[in-house]
Image 1 (tube, rainbow, N blue to C red):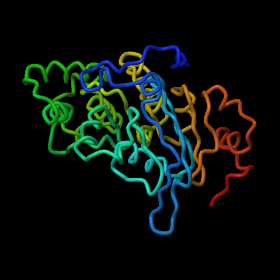
Image 2 (tube, rainbow, N blue to C red):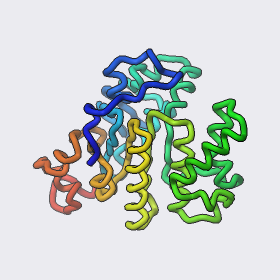
Image 3 (spheres, one colour):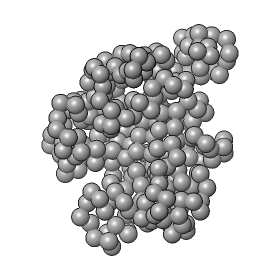
Length: 276
């Protein structure tokens, strides 16, 4: 377990945000308040309120279909809530202009379920893409950054390969490297263990921990894999039927007496969670 985030130095020190944030905003760079979202008659989020701490890994767990991925889309500004607030560095991202949201998104790195790599590009160009799109760095500078990130995730020798030439685990690592090239303050993982066998899942968790120790920031891991949550989490939040049923430090979550929390984390059939 990594050190409690309240005892770690905050990292609001780059040019985009320096001098503009309060202690509270840097301690909790992401917050959602009374978030509600429906698709037609189906209410995915009924009343979600969560804080995501800086310099910590928060895992959001819950059965399939509970809105975990929808939460990520709200945080990065891809979905607007029906009601409630999405606060990033203290700003409600749906009370600012699209150009301001665009600038805030530059502080995010996102690893999607399948890596979301461009099939027409090799790994080098995939990882370099955010740098070419969002910065005016020279190709020499881009090469230094890309190769440093590729080395961190163990893909230096495969940098010229296309996504179709590598395994699923390697595609995840390439997606992770791309998520880190802009030195984001926030990194979001949408089911990073999806499609991976237990060994590769464990290795990916090791990589997440290593990169967080190296770079810091607020990491949010959305998953339903209990082993992953046990390995990487500083905090654990649980969503069920559109509501937060538990949120605490990881140690307290795995020792909880709450019937739903105990059933889900133990993977037992007896309890309030059924097939519906």
